[in-house]
Image (tube, rainbow, N blue to C red; front, side, top):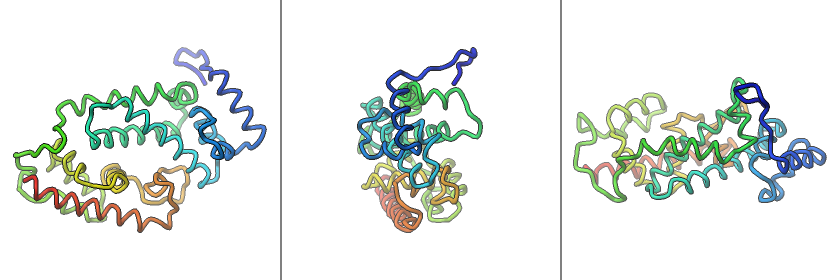
Length: 246
């Protein structure tokens, strides 16, 4: 692991010892999941990238990493509405997955093994200015949501996620989109909607290194229909909210 000037990054000594300890017991890193609280996130990052090659194991390691990242985002986004925090968290997690499994190794992806928290905090803070003019919780907007007055969620029931995203960006303001997302009662339903319809993650994928919606929730590909039902419910609740906030 090297810095921009060529000097090597160095993991903290306790992380180096932990990696060596786990390698001596189980090179896949599966032992980390037996008592996750015992290990630093940097150790999980190392084995997610280098150890757990089996799809299910790698997915579990990544899930633990994303859970910890989510907590860091929440702590460093205090004062934002729950919906804003959800959107910020999803954006940071998408960034994190790209760092964990880059097409080509980067200094930043390597730095996750040195100071994971700093990487997540920095990326979280970068998102905050996007929500500077956020509405207050439960605030009802009066402006029309769309140019045509039509429901911007109509096409979100289509299979074409790219088309759905284009419609949402064209027709819904950022503040109105946050209001609609806030109308989704279940947090898992809201996250599934964001990942599938707005972030365009695949529901399942044959390559275990590709982030998927089912994998995010720690579910097997066979549960794709369950997650799709969550998304359908989220759309239903957002459509109902659209009528209320016209």
